[in-house]
Structure formats: structure tokens, C-alpha cells
Image (cartoon, rainbow, N blue to C red):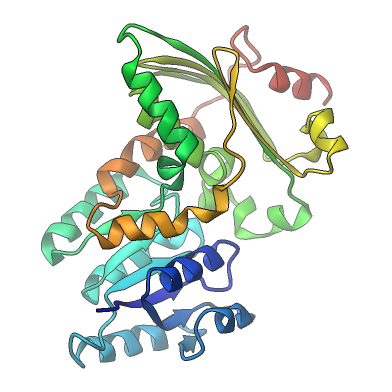
Length: 320
């Protein structure tokens, strides 16, 4: 029997992936919320959705559906709202008797996870996080390779993620650290989650440089040493990416060997949704390590360039 979904933040950048996943898993979208009314994207997937621009009316409608019985109530709430609202919108989902499916980061602060776990116990509902890199074939192959390697093997990793953003980014909520969590949380959490999942717990963390556009540092995990560099500045793109007209560059070098995972990156939400619908989705405990790490990074004072700094970070800082 198809499940009823609602979506919060339907006008946002990532919402189409959720709409596609709801459609492709054979379910139906019954309600949507966004303060912006530019939501024509809905008609590409569902043409009979109750849409709201005010949370209070959306809340009242969801409560009405809850009282109309199993075939009418909302079973899942997909949350694509700004990062700082995730916690409140997850709580809303649980209060109306629905499971929550939330984009990354699940929350900004580790202690919010404790409160959500308590709400899960009280309501009997689940909180799921979209950790789509964990279902990427190349990442799954890497995890299997690491698990089969000698247990004392320590990998040397260089992580680069450069994604060009214009002035709008810094005017929007994304440019406000208190709302987005900053670069490490907003654009880096995918990769930090993946590294922690494959290479084990964080043992040591350093932030070498941080400004609103770029950030870099060094991590020691149980089975890896990681030099990382994140940037929103197109000037940091390597020449090869510029020549190819690319505005985004992702690279993970592991012991000098590049892991290619650029393709298929946007098509993984449906896979995650299928796992959730089968009861195998990623929950609060899965999200916790990367939330704790990015909180630590966000609140660390930069110590300056070191021998362990990523070479691209070194070059970017010297050019300033």
C-alpha cells in the first residue's frame, strides 16, 4: 500500500531529489510547505498536492489528516528546509505520528540528537538521515576494500571539495554560520560522514585555516590520516576543471589513488528511500559521528598552515 508523504522546503535546491524518490518508490505526496511559492516543480511529479506557505496552516492540515485514519494520515515527512530548522521540523513530524526523513546535517549541535532520541522513544517513530554516499557503488567498494585490508593498515587521504558559489550564497541563510553550520557542516558533512564510516572514529582534529569561503585542516581517524580542503571560491578550482568548464571539483586520493564518485551522485536518494521504506535507513546513531566532528571543527580556532595542510589549501592561503 502506498504511503503518504509531506515535504517541508519544497522550493529548495535539494527538494527535486526527494520528489523523485517519493515518486519512484510508488508513494504519494499529499502536502507540501515552503514560504516561497515558486513550486511549479511539483507538477512534474504530483498534481494533487495541498500546498502551504505558512507553517501554522500546514500544521493544522497535517493534524486534520492524522485524525482521518490510516489511509489519510501522513506517514513520512521529508525535510529539505534550512539546516537550523531541521530539529524543529523533525519534532513536528514525530508529533503528528510520522517518521522523519531529513537532509544533512540532521541537526547542527550534538545535544539536539539526545533530545530527538528521547522523542523517538516517546512516540515510537523514527528519524532517518539522507547519507547517500553510503549507498554509492564506488564508496561501498572502498569500504569493502578497507575492511579486507590488514587491521593495522593506516591510509593517507587527501580530500578536496570545491563548489563555486556566487554572492547570493552569503546573503542567504547558507552564509550565516548560526543557520548553516558553516562550510564544514553545510558542504563537507557528506564527506566527513563517509570517512568516519569507512576509516573509523576520530582520534585527532586540527583546523588550519577558516574564512567564510574556504576551510582546511587535518584529521586522524582510527585507520586514516586525512588532509582536507573545502572551498566555495571558483579561484581554487584546479586548471583541469577550469578548462573543462566545471564549477565543482571533488577528489579523494587514498594512498595516491583517486576514488572516482562524481557520476551518480544525484541519483542516490531513491536508493536511500527504498532502504528507509524497508526499515533499514540511516538513523540518529549513524548521523552522530559527523555531527560531533563538524561541531568541533566549527568551534575550533585555526592554528595556521602546517606540514599536514593540504597543498591546495597552502596555495589558496598564499594567494590571498
